[in-house]
Image 1 (tube, rainbow, N blue to C red):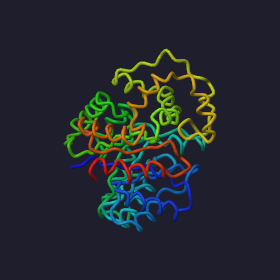
Image 2 (cartoon, one colour; image 1 turned 30 degrees about the vertical axis):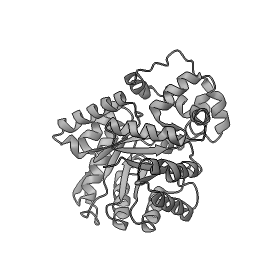
Image 3 (cartoon, rainbow, N blue to C red; image 1 turned 90 degrees about the vertical axis):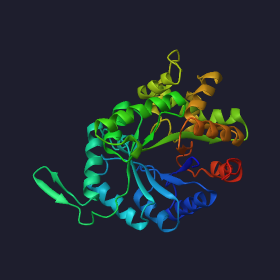
Length: 343
């Protein structure tokens, strides 16, 4: 079966416009879309999902990603069950720690324990079971139907292990280097086995930073802030090391931590690129290739073929745009990449 390919779609415009772009993704041949959930940056994810599902026919629509700190798990369960009723089999809940949602309102992101408890509670409620909330036991009146699958978005090994234990699948931020992929899958496998589950029942989706331009160097320059962000977060060091890369020699400018709301979602994108200019071109090229699909359409076709050979079955394309639709990448896949892949 051909590798599945989903595209990130920010709910950055009025809902009818978001749905119109999702319909374009469906017509172009994408298997799914992931709609961001960041309440101060984008429109509401579940309203956007429902409208998109009602106006498409086959594309998968996922929350990419929601979290259990700005939304109580019971609220998430109800929202997930509701969108699942709109288009049975096409709605998916991807849940993470909630950095961009939590940071902007002054609360900490979810802990690993919160992630585990939230997913367990959501699946119980959607399945029609009763759940203890302290001294109160409750059930969701509309639970018991076909629940939306719940995937855990994970970068670190502890969350990956939890995903193997309780989730229906994972959305991984390790990059797509074969050695990093193999290490992450082993952690998930161990978590599933420890919980008495069959690891083959879980779907692993690998997030691909995706920036497509007519010129390889230009694409890498656009990706520069996203590459530098990998160096800022300690969790990524494991996957860079697994991929045979070490960038400890570089000193990161302090201003990177002052960008609002953070580097990958920076409103002042030009300032972000300026602060990231310290990274040499050869290091940038290494990072870009490990992160995903960054280059010309022809280059990206070869990268996808390499990913398939390495055993990846599902890619989630995350572009550099948080406040605009990825029209360029959509056109590149529709007009060049999908035809070259025989789709």
